[in-house]
Length: 389
Image 1 (cartoon, rainbow, N blue to C red):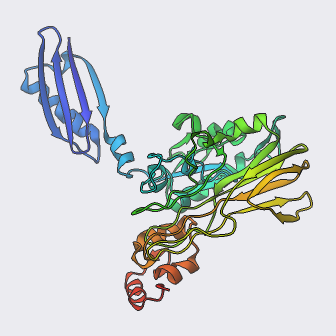
Image 2 (image 1 turned 180 degrees about the vertical axis):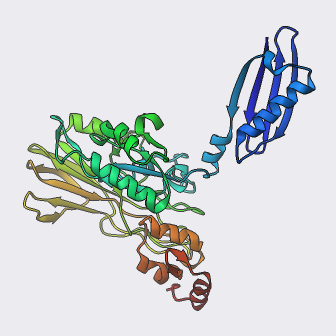
Image 3 (image 1 turned 60 degrees about the vertical axis):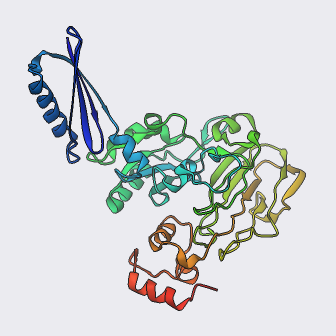
């Protein structure tokens, strides 16, 4: 029996021919054809058979592997991906379990934040969730809204869509996928990664050197990692209405400060809470010309909508059913002169709602027109030093 193994790489396609009866092995290498990898595969298969006097019809098995997809992920290239999820959980793939790769280092890059599968501008939300533990819906079926959102974003941005559709939206994800656009691939959360889900717990932010600050990163204690929202809601009285990053508050710097999260808990029964937080009075320092960070907040919202600001440390507070607690995490200070930040990165920060359009020229000296960087105007603005103060 003869077997051929094929590995399609980014530059070359490697082949190995094994004659299992005679115990012979032959190898060959051909250029990969990026426009259609199958062209290179078939050319290599024909060549290795000719070189070894083998009739292709006598090959019993062809085994195929590829690093093309792996390379696309590692190099942050490939299809433009969008995501649809429930309102309040736009950043679940950005925050994840809010851990750091190197436990004690603040000089590190988190790949899932710096090179996310779906950029923040392409993560859209729809209304609707289930109220635990009964499973009652607090809003109508969100399927129609999900379809409309996906269609609009595809038409506007030309993205593929990963339907990260959480309860109850994920139950209709198959129908949403089938009805969006026939020519666009749409996957459900279960098909992409079964462990991806919203998380909620405590976090602090750290500033990273030579890369942007880590967003919504935990403390150094190993037992303070996020727990899945569904798990917490099945065991505790609060419903978690929101857990995502704060908008438009990223502190300026050559490397921007880490962004804190905003979380909203609504109590479904009379209960209480205690909190040990920090950073509500003094903002984190900036360094080497970077702007200072943003303080945290903790607000109690009554059933009538009134708000009460709480201290960062609350030993015990009684909550009535229907009241909500909103926690805003602090944002780390910026690192380095904002005028040295790459203009295209500044544009990305605007599109991803990390900074306001007003902060672009005021803090970074970058001029944006029609969602593009005006290079000449940016050079003039930065040369004048208007954003250096």
